Length: 340
Image (cartoon, rainbow, N blue to C red; front, side):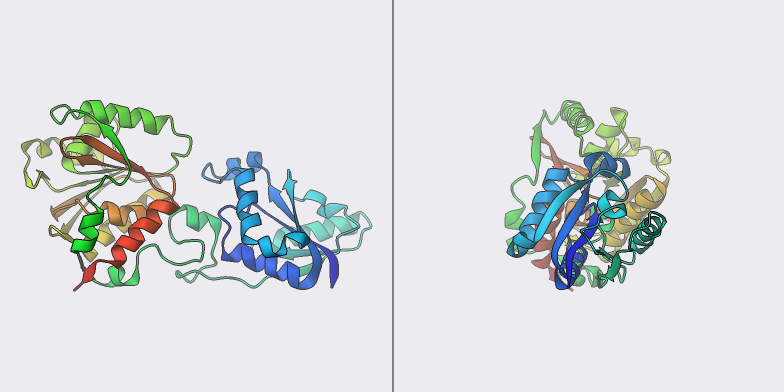
């Protein structure tokens, strides 16, 4: 048993892979020092990474039964105290951080110090078959346990809206931005202003509904992902023809009848989000049927920090940021759908 072991990392959105590192450290060391990457370094990697104090609080909550054996420190470079410490005799690593730990030992040898024993933590895999990571959580691919945000029954079958779910959708799911129905530009401009001023906007701008999408286009702000069905209030809308498909890198057609979420719609949304993540491409989805329920799929699929905007008839627009809370709420609602 080692006296002190070192663990370094960003520890954003503390997940089961992080817990594996901690457990490996506790199993092999009397005490462990967790060296957590500074905000300056973390933000240079990804602006969606939480602040140091938030990451510290997350780790403390998750490891509270072992608080007397764990201390948390600020890591301001790639190595922290590992290059020169004489007190620590071990360093806990994952397959992803092994190379950096080997470099630490190489530098220690050059300085005439004993190498640290490398303790390899057991890998934790997500539903995708890949090692769970904070970046995949930020990209919306999984929760902190590596589980999918879209329930299996929704991934495998078309789903039908139930009375239970419908009753929970009557109130706006997000912030209501008020504006007159006859002039959507007022609410649109306010939404654009709020989104542009929000530091955590680091994802897609998603517009749902013909009126909303055309409103953004007229204001000069193209949604990265737009869903339209040629209707407003379930009636044909002449102005839908003004939505210029040529503005989009991809145009996808799918089918999703009123009151349902089809696999066709799900796959269209999934492909669109992937195209944005991988290539920065924008997509227009043209739905034969209705796109009203699409936000229940878009929140689970979209990266954290995305903004989903849709119309609220007679009131204006609803703006909802995509975060772990919105993903979890949508997952719970999806579980209450009926499947064919």
